[in-house]
View 1 (cartoon, helix red, strand yellow):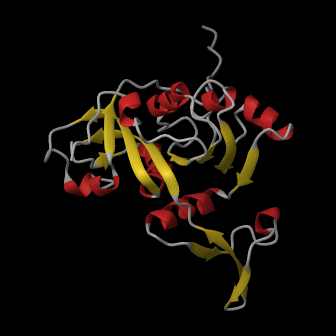
View 2: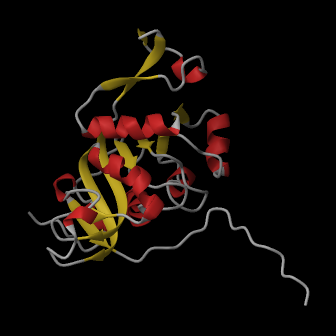
Length: 234
């Protein structure tokens, strides 16, 4: 099976449709599939739902799709760095399904494992629990959360081989792995494609069986919150 494509647009050809649910990797501004998001923007698809830890910032990540009004719903944990997100949500233009961070990661992992739902104590007694089934286990109350089964997963990795085995760097591993597993189709963008057999099997974070298409590209190195000290006087 051919997995390597020339660019993001080619890798998404025949995959994108209006109204689809997309699981996107990334944590803050780390590990965001920026090239694939740009290609989604250029495709013009609309009414999209995204399951992603965050929505990027106004001019990066999913934020570029919020600017063009291509997103109708976000399933997220943290959205505090995006002014356009806030404006759309408060004005009623954007639907938001808040998830505790661990719950969102587990919902993606569950979907990837074929698990339709699971019980968790996280969120009990809060607005997160509103409308959800409650069940007691050993005297403790839990709520039912559903697994996420996405139409498409888009992720960003450090290295890949031509079979789709992926290696992530540091924090980029947090949400990219569960996001990749829960999509019917997974498209990965990577910094480097290496020869088959050159990756240490014990260092592979995501087996190639989950990955259908791969692109290699240049990526921007963003800093979410730049903090510096004042220069000391001589």
